[in-house]
Length: 154
Image (tube, rainbow, N blue to C red; front, top):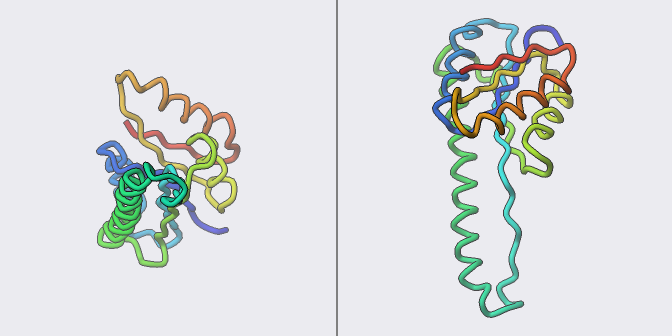
């Protein structure tokens, strides 16, 4: 596991873009760097439209929501291409698009532990009402991950 292995949780916000720009400014054109973009999505249940007459409309809505999930997956691949266009080689950048089973903080910790990562770059929206929630995610990362750099971009 030589080099730097960077995990970048990505949720398609402007603040995530800032984290991405940090990664580009700091690590582009370095050969021993590997970046993984991670998006955790909320999985949608499968519905059997034949079990109840009223589920037909709900199934149509769910199909639309699944389309949005697939579009996010394609957008994550475009973000990967952005990194490649800005100094990374194709074999240096990968994507993980995983369904959420636990809370977001736990999903990030699990992904970081499973991989060879030694750096996590995460964004934070400063001075907002939701800060307590995002701060909780950062607290989980800081508490749970050992021997790993955690970079918080604001």
